[in-house]
Length: 70
Image: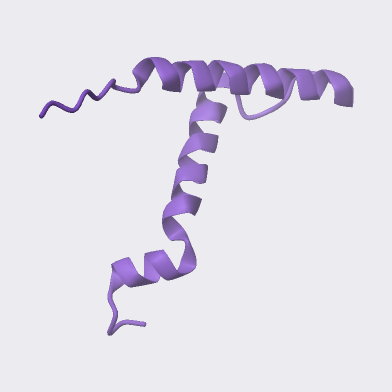
């Protein structure tokens, strides 16, 4: 593995995708908190759905708009 380099290892193992998921979960936990507050499963599902909506809205607002000029 060492002869192909770190980037080849990351591509082969899917490390980049895992890193994106870990960063997203860290953002979610920092924003919403590390624990669910609701006791019942239905309420927990609603709490998670609300947190995901908030996180998605934040990502959409922060994403730059790219306009290609020729």
